[in-house]
Image 1 (cartoon, rainbow, N blue to C red):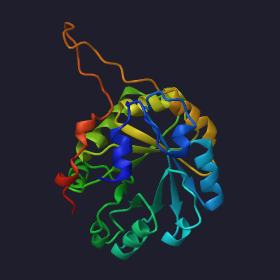
Image 2 (tube, rainbow, N blue to C red; image 1 turned 60 degrees about the vertical axis):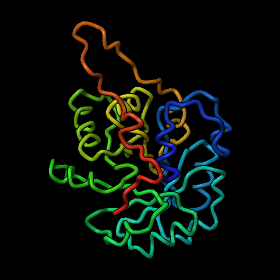
Image 3 (cartoon, one colour; image 1 turned 90 degrees about the horizontal axis):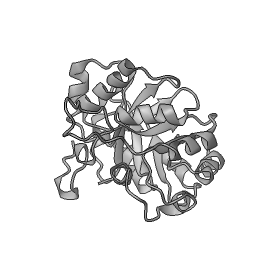
Length: 245
């Protein structure tokens, strides 16, 4: 099981301490992770010090050598990944990699013990989403519009999470507030992805303020299921039960 999957699984639990960034925060349970894009070692270090749970670096595995992660997760952006590049990323300390299934080679899914994050793109037809579900993924990246989230917006995100069977990593088009993050969380998002030029500090503070999902008493007359975040067992596998393609 990858470290990224473990962090997603542990959402909602009171942390016991996870690296420098976690120790710098309060011990309250987290309900949304913050992932930051980094262009170089300096921006990666700055993101970690601000409180990002994970960073994503664009470039080759060699770019990871000069980054002191201080316990934060680190991923490599490899849209057209090959098996050799993914293996090199893992050997360099990457916890996960991002890939485009239309560009990455099938061999990119061969290495084990490294998380897989799919860049979904605009093609979200039902058949495609269901086909993605056969890949053992840690998360799926979708684009999110910051602002008032409608019920239809929320259902569209939930549809992706449900059909792919993977938590969502929502790439925000602007700095999200707590209300936006909560709406995304309730649609199946486990993390928000912020660009290198975004207000990361404000995003971290907004994520820390996301409350626990509301629970409705099932005994209530006429109670309807709540659109909630993915349950931990929706995408949680024992180490010896993970099936890798």
